[in-house]
Image (tube, rainbow over all chains, first blue to last red; front, side, top):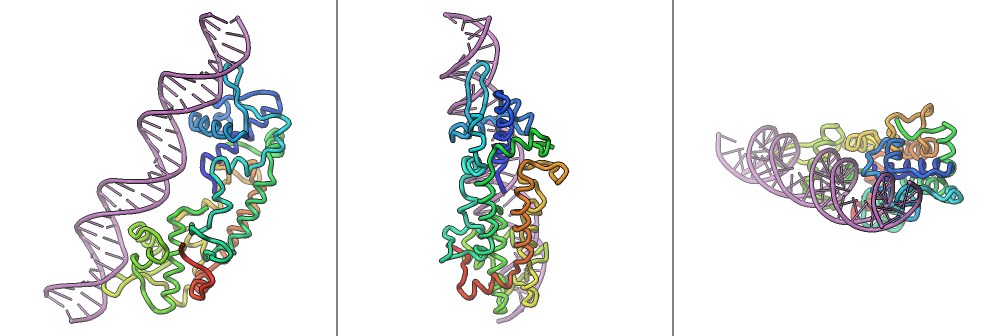
Length: 144
Length: 144
DNA sequence: TTTATTTCGGATAAATTTATCCTATTTATA
DNA sequence: TATAAATAGGATAAATTTATCCGAAATAAA
């Protein structure tokens, strides 16, 4: 469904959010340990999230990654997915046709519509706040 | 969503079905031309579909690939997806956790459940017959 | 200003997926 | 039986994704 890079990106953002609520910045080392991902690769993904203004980075001593506490609720999963995997999940044809729409549909166009729309809706409605709070409360997990 | 191999496999199976209704066998060359895919790679995928008993192959002169006319309606998309991509779409965790279920959910487990179930249901309920008939009637397309 | 710490970013390598090529094997027909 | 036509399958290459390494740049604090 998502690339590994995207999975790491989502989990990293959630973890950063939980720490940002505590006013703490986190390093790629802490992040990769917490989400069980390769450190250097995760660092690359964090760079991408920074460039897309989804998370903030602070260089130098006592630096690290963080998200503005007041903005955590505004960050939608769709932004993260879009930043890393692009919009192919929404806009792309399920069977890879170059051109696929109501007027020139692939064989599964209509049947996929529901699934795609539900996925899109879910990603656009889910924000980091609720996901981070569920992690903090122990209702959900980032690894294992 | 699906691998390219799987996209090719689905489109190839649909095309074979349309030809099988006419009692005609088709070659990898015809198939790849019709679904706009690399011929040799497509041939490998056809081999996999044969091994999974989703399509039949007949070697030698006047041979080719076909599907029993009486069985076309019984072939579900889920069988093709399963044969090529495995069951990761259904059973795998959306964020790649090794263990992810009600008791130990990833952050998006519940939110993904609906999407996954709808996708699964759609793949299990859609058969080659309806897809092939839509191609024959010009209601849907396999390329461009 | 120096030092320690930390992200940034380029180069490269490993793994996986996608794709190609060529020979062997099978089979219908002349 | 010989021949032509077709799938089967192994070896290999190209492209993409995933992953690692290391030096440069930036920054806080001593």
